[in-house]
Length: 252
Ligand code: NAD
Ligand code: ZN
Image (cartoon, rainbow, N blue to C red; front, side, top):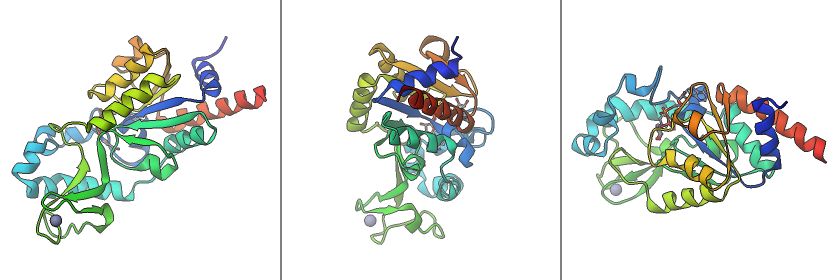
């Protein structure tokens, strides 16, 4: 009888339109703490005081100085890990087409995936709130707080703060790819932030197989996931990929 890992690998190896939904957990092994759970950012920072758009607009200097500058420094030096590389390899093998990510760290693109929907935007770029000018993260001068554009306007990350809408185009495209995939890989997400957490449900209702990778159980584990591969993203993706490649070699 197949183990869960073997079954998941077999279904992935047969797919040519798999989609991944990723969350903060896939970047933990790159040194970026998740928001929830042990060691999570929210143990230190109250989300409503730091990551809500109203808090930012009310006092951008405080949010920049106490929160954004710390997050930016962590993100600027982070590099993809085996979890990200595994997903890039699945694209290169012609299995994975698209990643829907809740992460704002740009690590999927750095690993080489070409179609990444950044559901919650990115910290790789910043936008001036006055003139709309855009610059990359490494050109932001954090010696002055809050960082300002030449026009005097304050820069904000191009992310979606709590209290802001997901740009409709991203939501619409995510729903579309979720509805048309045959396998959805769900990696490192607590699956509680909506509407991202709906994507595996849409995939499942459209007939896709759902493979979940997470060290902890989530609301998806019992009701939605066909395969729950318990473990960290790096190690689990590496083993999954080895088995996928074995299946491909056997069927040639
Ligand atoms: P979350 O913080 O709510 O949950 C993290 C999940 O990752 C948990 O289920 C946890 O069990 C799992 N996890 C922990 N270590 C792991 C590992 N080594 N391998 C695999 N999984 C592991 O994250 P979320 O579901 O993405 O939702 C929170 C929001 O936080 C997202 O909207 C995202 O925008 C934002 N966020 C992004 C980053 C980033 O860009 N790297 C970091 C923190 C938060
Ligand atoms: Zn400006």
